[in-house]
Image 1 (spheres, helix red, strand yellow):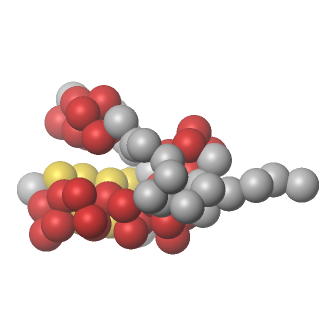
Image 2 (tube, rainbow, N blue to C red):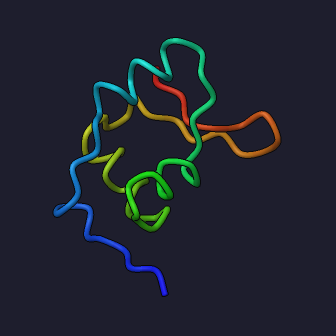
Length: 68
């Protein structure tokens, strides 16, 4: 049984995330959710709450999360 955490109770390291994305590393919701023990929808909400319109979610084989 896996437990998930509320996005407000988990601190995502936004600086490390931004560095990885800007450095060209492929970052996915699935990977972030596994890393922080959260649901993918909760990770998405946290990223949108923090970055707003700057964050883009790209679907598909070469998709991932990008920042504008």
